[in-house]
Length: 441
Image 1 (cartoon, rainbow, N blue to C red):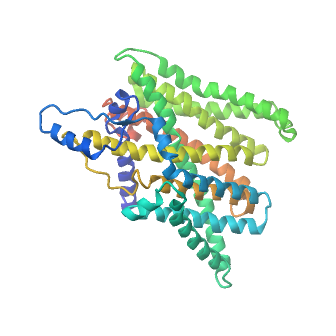
Image 2: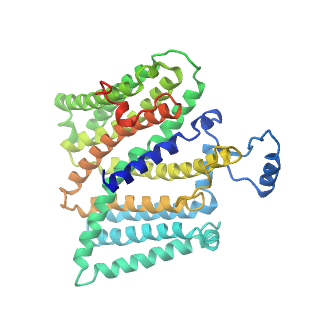
Image 3: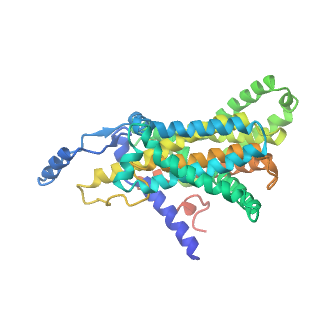
């Protein structure tokens, strides 16, 4: 096995272990998070640790409070910069001009790099205090860095010697960002549906036999198939070009696509769960997660099929792009806070796993999120504006992107269920072995 294979395996194992750590804590606490304690409370806790009985931490942050943290005065101005920049990209993209393409290249990369460097510099106390102040001065550092990077990119693009090569390189970069994002959004989209499924699981009784998991996993793609048909019918009444395409053949391919995806997913899911799918708690989690996540998959399946007959709908992708951006900011923030909460919860026990040593922390995660989302938003508007023919234009890029989301989404659905089973100690075999049938061949 090559070194790269080993590295990728380690990354996957670490991701799965991160999902599994102290899963029960969040079920019992109704998905609440331990928040940073004051110095006085920490001193009191240290004194309490000296006695046999360890006191439970009493300061928590709910998911509603996570959103209030993200959009607090310390971060609100940065989020406003994101939406102002993307709105500007959206307006100039309608011109379909070379100037618009150049501006999106320059400002998109410049803004993304500016916020990325700001996030990296937040390890220094002075930078953290400046970039997270509750006034417009918090924008000084990221906007200054963005301007520096944008100026450098502008100068490079206008160089007579290597300007054209640089433009091609940056164009390919946007295409790569756009495609890689499809993998990422399938993973990030699991967060809200997983939280709902965990709540439903916590309400389910212990050690009862039920077919709820099987029924919901089978019905979920069928329910969203029917809802998608209604959406297609509504679109056909509003868009004359699509009305001619919305015929019996289109409906047949829609049913075939959703049925094929549903059958493949349920086959592997059934092999993985085996008899555990009848357990009340496992069935509740698996069923409700499928019910929500299939809505995400059906959206991309519908847009993919629509683009096979018509030009990709930039309006539909724009709406979903905004939803995805908001979800990414929330998901990254929630994961970082949960990582710190797990460590805080385990700190007085023998299971303490140490302080977080990764790049992201509660202080800089918003800046990393903005960096990623600026790059993604810019790539969307650039591909809609430039109409590049490198891989078949915007139509080819859109089709490839939605195909990637569908394949990645099925894999994510299986991984989330796998993490639940291993986290509860129900299975110990590897992911690939868990979905094989027959076993041990």
